[in-house]
Amino acid sequence: MVLGLLLARAGVPVTVLEKHGDFLRDFRGDTVHPSTLAILDEIGLRERFDGLPQRRVDHLAGLVAGREQQIVDFRGLAPYDYLALVPQWDFLDMLADAGRKLPTFDLRMQHAATGLIEDGGRTVGVRVKSPEGDYELRADLVAACDGRHSTLREAAGLRARDYGAPMDVLWFRMPRSESDPQDTFGIVDHGHMMVLLNRTAYWQVAFLVPKGSDAALRTRSVEVLRESVAQLAPFLADRRGAIEAWDKVSTLSVRVDRLERWHQPGLLLIGDAAHAMSPIGGVGINLAIQDAVAAANALAQPLLGADTIDESVLASIQQRREWPVKVVQRVQIAMQQRLISRVLEQSGRPPRVPGLLRFLLGFRAVRHIPARLFGYGLRQEHVRTPAAPPSA
Ligand SMILES: Cc1cc2nc3c(=O)[nH]c(=O)nc-3n(C[C@H](O)[C@H](O)[C@H](O)COP(=O)(O)OP(=O)(O)OC[C@H]3O[C@@H](n4cnc5c(N)ncnc54)[C@H](O)[C@@H]3O)c2cc1C
Image 1 (tube, rainbow, N blue to C red):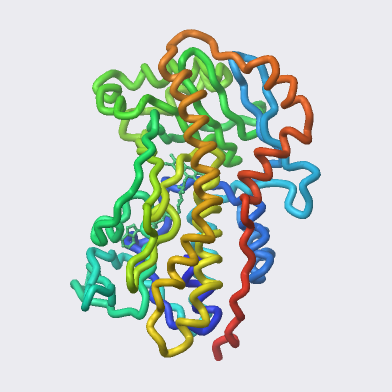
Image 2: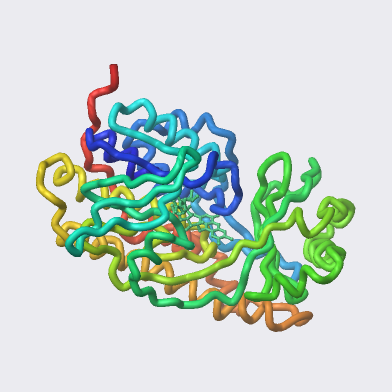
């Protein structure tokens, strides 16, 4: 959506295909980090964004075996010293509305890309399935931004390096009450781990389970999950019946991988389609947006010209974005191996934050390190595309 918006804003005709009929689903996460807040400022959408329902979080803590541990601190990191928790559907609706005001932006909901059209070794369009029937859409460039189960990655036959993930996430809601903690925080104890996202009226719960264990878990009574939640967060015990049945609980499958090549002649992949991100750090949305900004900066001028896009332009986008993505993925993989695997394997044994780490995390300057890495990223992108004249 961001790539489409930036290109259309520069005057490039863009068609955005979205296979669903709306954005009302939960699978993406809610975190809008400082790097994205900066982009919104740069394209004049910040005021509208600030008007969306949201919570601002300026620090993140964990409850490890009953002991509070401050981990990330945005305070003092001006000019964006917080991350915003915004429902994805509101954020995407806002971007879609901004796009619809541009004469060259064409958003087609319920239109799914099902395959690539090739001609002479070059991608020249996509096949589309829509309620009105199937059709072919020709384009100077196809940008595959279709997420971690990318159809177009598969269609292109591009090779990915799979780093694996030890966990999947059970995703469900619990009611909030006035006396509950205000913060968004993680809890690690009793061989379980969960993150509670404060969405004002309710808690969005992300409960981690060992990879692939979901099917077996679902053959048991949902009481097993209720018990674990109540054990981890005793203040939720009185409401555990809110998890009525397994069908109220979605399973989000976690994967971490990265393509060796993010492009072919006529085709570019960005976001999770190029590099599926773990939920750790809540950073995948923001990295996908940084990719989109870098891609728009490189592509707007060539696309406005009459020439076909040279593959070296696509290669330069991968070159620019690959290493910041790689570093974040390495940190995510290390945390998956050193923290999450151990917690999920050691049922019952209370985890411990090593003394030295606990000491270091006592300093705000140390807590700024993860805030900078995840909040701003290692290579912050800025919008360099021009703004097209407003439509009549
Ligand atoms: C459990 C879990 C929790 C997460 N939590 C967070 C978080 O809190 N914060 C964060 O920043 N990241 C989080 N992530 C990572 C984040 O979801 C991704 O990194 C991010 O959504 C990638 O953005 P994207 O635009 O590349 O893909 P997506 O957000 O997946 O968007 C892809 C879009 O393409 C559409 N689509 C798919 N196939 C087609 C097709 N064939 N034709 C047309 N449209 C299609 C989809 O409907 C979707 O709208 C989480 C990941 C997991 C697994």
